Length: 428
Image 1 (spheres, rainbow, N blue to C red):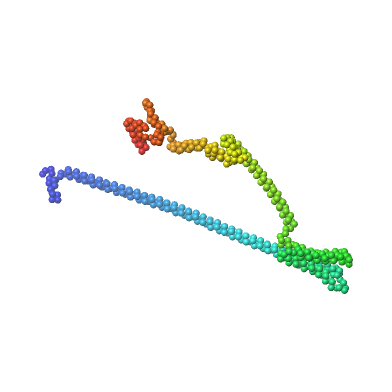
Image 2: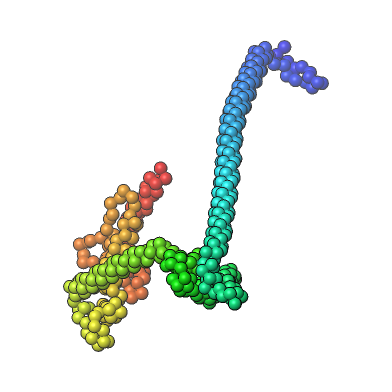
């Protein structure tokens, strides 16, 4: 047989391979299988490691999530406790305020009731004292009439005309009726002086009869005593009515009038002192204003002599005795062309300062500013041996083609190389 034999495979004639080839193929197949097995094991290990990593990540994430949830729960619990404590504190504060208000209201009611009771007691005491005084005055009036009537009746007694004994009683009754009418007028708020005048006329008439007849028929003690009784009874009753009148009309007592006069004198003295103080302050303010005006005039004349001279002329022309603010404003506008707070120098200085601020803000931080030559004001071409030609900008301020010589090709190439290197450095 030859090195290769022919065999049939699936009915087809196939050349027969040698043993070396078979072994080589088998080795290759084994190597491929081993490689597949190694690859499968690596994939399995990789998958296991990946699954383990994912499981660890899930476990770590779950742990972290659980920890976050625990912390969130703790924070929520703390927040709830804090809010609860705050609400409880608010409720307690509201209860304390309510209790305090109720206690204050109760105290106010008690004080009002106590004040009302005190007023009632005082009014009742006044009424009781007034009634006692009225009854006492009535009783005293009757006693005085009993004391005075015998002498007066003795003066009118005549055996042939006993009816004249009614005259002294009539006189006493006149005084009594007039005083009762005065009391009614006081109670009703009507005029009362004429009732009291009639009562005093009757009392004086009875006293005169007692004195004249008592001195003639009896002794002076009897005469003056009965006359005093005739006056004392109506007098005491009239004192009672005078008190009622004073209380009704709100008449002040002597002590109250004296205190009111003293308070009025004190208030007048305090008002005089206050007026003197106000006048002194006004005078001091006027002097201070004059000093300020003089100082202002001096400063204006010193710092703005031209404007001040013109302002004096304007004041004289307009009929002003001094340089008013309106005159000064007009004079400053005439000389400087602006309001008093502005001038040409101030405006220029402000503009220069604004330009310096803009230039400073346009500088990059940490870099030293470099003076850049304006291409529209000077030639930007480098110096050369030949005389360079200066080409100023056009009237429109726009540069045109041909204003500057073109660069040579070497310079253009070098500029392109420099630009690429700069771009690379920026990107790096």
